[in-house]
Amino acid sequence: GAGVSQSPSNKVTEKGKDVELRCDPISGHTALYWYRQRLGQGLEFLIYFQGNSAPDKSGLPSDRFSAERTGESVSTLTIQRTQQEDSAVYLCASSLYILGYEKLFFGSGTQLSVL
Amino acid sequence: GESVGLHLPTLSVQEGDNSIINCAYSNSASDYFIWYKQESGKGPQFIIDIRSNMDKRQGQRVTVLLNKTVKHLSLQIAATQPGDSAVYFCAEGSPGAQKLVFGQGTRLTINP
Image (cartoon, rainbow over all chains, first blue to last red; front, side):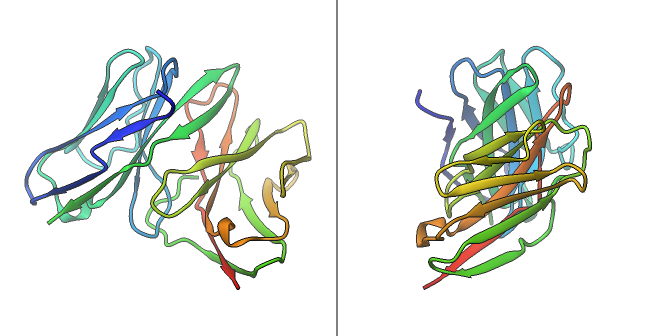
C-alpha cells in the first residue's frame, strides 16, 4: 500500500472490555513501532519490533497491554480490560532500517475512547 | 528522552515571521536527527533530517541546525504560514540503537 494503514480509525468501548487495534505497515519495512498519544500530549513509546529480534516491550504501561507482529507484516495491539485512562490515540509507524539510519512513516492512528 | 504525560509547550508567532523550534537531545552518541510535523487529527509526517557530520541542512522554507557541543537541535521555518500550525517533534537515533527516541514536542500556533 501507499502508507501505513491503521484500523479502526475510531473505537468506542466500555470499561472492562478488550480491544484489538491493527496496523498494516508499508511493505518491506522491517521495523514497527506503537505509540500512545493522549490529548494535547507527546508521543509515548509502547513497543518496537525489528525484524526477527525480540521486541522491545519496555514502554508497555501494564500487563493489560500486549502486541504481536508476524514476520514483517501486520501488527496487532491488544488492550485487555480497558480503563478510562486508556483513552488516547494509538499510532503505529513502520520504517526501513539500513546502516543505522531509519525514517519512520506513521499511520493516522486509532482514536480509542473508553466509556 | 521520551515524552510522557507532559502538556506540550506552545510557541506563538505572527504569520509571515520566522519560527524557531528548539530541541535538546539526550544521547551524545546520537548520529542522526529528524523533525516531524503533526497536524491535527493526523500522524506525524517527516519534514527534514540531519546527520551528525553536518551542522546545517536546508529544505523548502525549513532549516535544521545541529549543535553537538551542547546537544541542541533547532528547526527554523521561514515566513510562517497558517498551514505550519502543528505540533513539531524532534527525534534522535544512534548506531546500534534499538529505536528512535522522540522529544517532547512543541505546538506552533500562527497568529493572523
